[in-house]
Image (cartoon, rainbow, N blue to C red; front, side):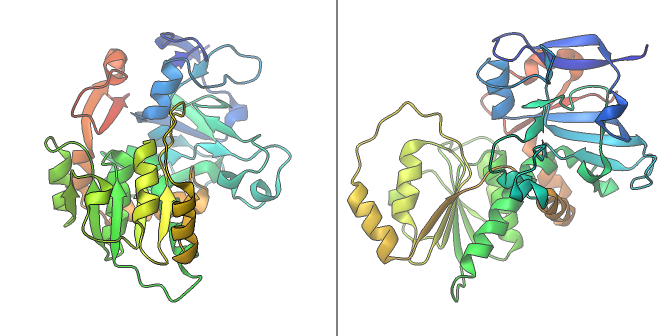
Length: 351
C-alpha cells in the first residue's frame, strides 16, 4: 500500500504535531481530483490547533492532517474539469450534510447550523501531505504565473468575501467611499489593503511595528502606514477592515468610522478580557451616523474565484515578499515557531 508524508496532530493535545512518513494515500472517497502538494501556509488557526486549543479529527479517527492553505499541481482529474499539471488550491470549507438553506445554494461560508466541515480544521483531513484529493467543485485553478505565491489564495479568499460584503452593504445608499483604514498588517490586513488599492481607494494601514518588512510592503501598494492609535488618526474612514481582533482596536474602529461608514471585523478576538467603555455613546454614534458593523469569516466558491483573479492582477514580486519564510517539510517544527518578522510562513513539500 502506497503511503505519503503528512503533518498530523492529535486534536486537543498540545505538542502533538509530527511528520508521519507512512500516512495512507488519500482515499478515493475524498474526491476525483488527485493533487501533488507543493506548499501549505501557516496561520493563527494552525497555531491554535497545534497548541491543542482547537481542531476536530475526521469521524472515527484520532489524528487530524493539518493544513488549510494549500497549493498543488493536478496529477489526475477523470472529470476533465482540470488537466494534469494545472496549478490548484483546495477550498477549505464544505457544506453541511443536511444542508442548511445557505449551504444548499453554495454559500457554505454562511452555514446556519454549524455542521460544515473544513480541511485541516474540522473533520476533514488537511492539505499538509504529499498528495491530496478533493471534488472538482472544491478545486480552484490558478494562473501558472502564481506557482510561487498561489498558497496565498486562501487568505485572499477571506478578504475577497469581506470586500464583497462591504460593497453589498454600501449599495444601501449613494455611497462613494474614498478612504479605507486597515488595522493590522499581517497577511489578512496586507491582502485587504491590496484589494482596496485594486479598487482605486486611498488606503491607510495601521500596525504597531515601526520597522521590519510591513512598512515597505504598505508603501509599495501606494498606501500610508501608521503606528499611532486609531483615535489619533486625522481622518474619518469610509471603510474600516479590522484584522487584529484586539478588543481595544475593535472598539476604537467602531468609534472612528465616518458617516454612512462600514466596519468589517475580520479578526477573531481571543476573549477573556473586559474593557470599560460607554456603550450608550457608541450606540448613539452608530445609529445617528447610519454606520454598519459586521463580521466576516471564511469564503465560498465565488469568493475563491474573485481571489484568484485579484492575485492574477497583483505584482508577483509584492506577493512573494509577503512570504517571509519558506520551510522544507522535513524541518516543519520551525514553521510553527513564530519569529518577529514573520508575515506568512509556508511549509514546502516540493523538492
